[in-house]
Amino acid sequence: MRDPSQDSYDAWKTQLPVPEFSNGFSGYTASQLQEYVTSHEAQIEEGGNLEARQFAVLDERSASDGTVVLWMQLDKDLMGQGEESGDVEAEDEVEKVWRQWRVKFEDSEKIAIDLDMTIAMWPVYCRDDLVGEDGVFNVKRAIEIFEDGG
Image 1 (tube, rainbow, N blue to C red):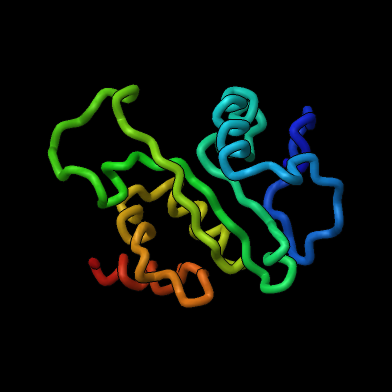
Image 2: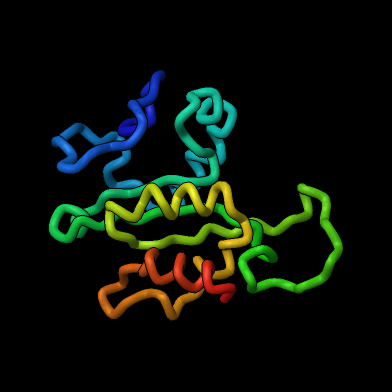
């Protein structure tokens, strides 16, 4: 999706290099993007290849270092930060929080799928110690930790 006025959606899997395009979201803050995707949830889900809880941002840094900022709305207590109770809360009582990761473009599909399909990986993907000095989250190391049971 490249413009808030779009009535149809782009094909799956943007490939590098990304050709220049007009961006109707230019200047939107993270909060405005979050509000957009949550307020258009039904419309987005109907599109088939977009997630109402997840979006990616290509910014100025993306052009120079091949990274992308991935945002996802997670259930706070499943991130490894909440209470470890066995009680299941009603859907409307679960606290949702937005989390972001700057990742290498080539790792973005893997982390997006893992976050969407493998809730058990959330605590590993929410570890701040896997963010390098350059601010890029180490997806490959996170997968190794998860596979090793950590």
